[in-house]
Image (tube, rainbow, N blue to C red):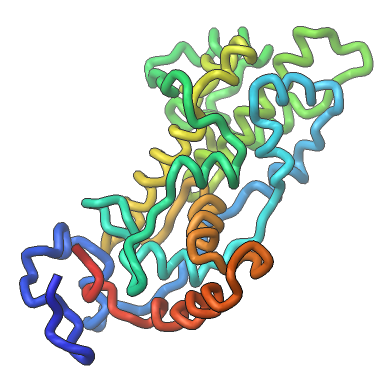
Length: 289
């Protein structure tokens, strides 16, 4: 792409800016651009405080392949960095455009950062559900109407109903509690909505057989969901972002090789670190395609 010059970095041909009229970056030079920092609700800490995992359900969570997510716990996020990256996300190519190069989050990032499986059958579900029958069978309780929002269920309600197990809990009780724990973990971290208080029940049938659950490509599903949320957040009317924010944050920090100087060449790391302030202030329109 050709640019006008150092002080006028917009491309010579505006037609290369796909979807630019709806993208956040077209507001940079207007009065509508207020440089608002995204602050979506992070519910992982709240979930972990509400649900102390019973050691008896740990084998079930491990069998399903989600214990690695539980071990990650709550991670602090650099929200100005996330805001900056959202403004540089291009929905057409699913990449971040920064001065040094095009960058994106890959399945390798998902495997390394989250530890989720990235091969196997695709995660597919249905929104047509018999909620009462499904929850009664796999959770052992039927949610009331005020705990539901369409086909999504309240994470707080799951914690209240399934987090406490009696001393004489049998295998069925333990597995149902594990189903609820994994479902709430998905809604709090992997597939979180903007408020992080509901999780869709389309994932619950996939937890029926936890051994089979571990064979699905959950990493691929999380990555696809993250791409979708980035595309939505990059639109000019959007004021928030949801999904697996930790993957965005640490996936790009890993690509910049600035997370740990011990892991890379020090001069290379200093070079990338010196570019970070420039990346924060450079108009997105200069890097869009």
